[in-house]
Image 1 (cartoon, rainbow over the protein chains, first blue to last red):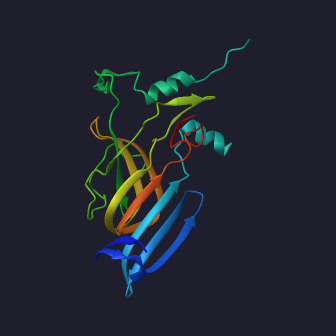
Image 2 (cartoon, chains in turn cyan, purple):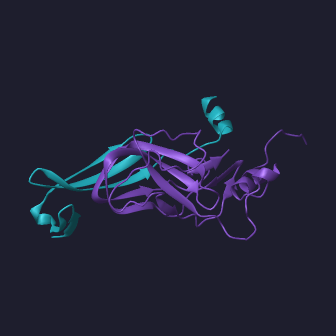
Image 3 (spheres, one colour):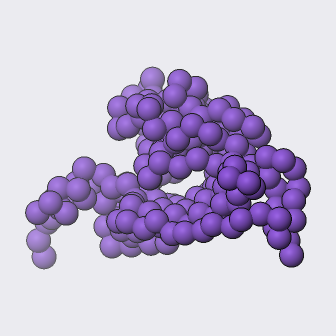
Length: 65
Length: 153
């Protein structure tokens, strides 16, 4: 059992429905976790790794060939 | 030997360290040997932040529980460096917004220099997100040439 911060306050996760997933593309990898209580979203966190870095124009031109 | 046209790599690193000033009006107030403070602000999916953004603005910024306007401080614990002809730097720690509720979809973070009149540095976009009584953690890419968050190539 674990305590989860929710819109209703601190709650035991055994009382909640847990949903989680990963959305990944060329830009980022987003791992999300949600807790629901009686059909209501009461917690959502996202752990996102950024992949897309910024480049100067010179480098962009080089990438485009 | 042969000469090769190039912007020197040392200059690129110098740019990240504010060493050069080509115009008196552009000289920042770097009178002390201290690094500037950089911050990261989140923007709604409906906002317009892009390469034309010159400074932080609250217009289009997210609002919500435990989110302070202007965002959070970004930690640059590692000095700018270079590999090959690319100068680069990446925040040395994840950017974290702890126990926030951001109910309206957001999809961008603006990194800006809060020491120097909130001047904009970079915009990074991602898929739209919301946070509910939770934590948003933006994990940085590897601090190497070509993968660092900021590259001058």
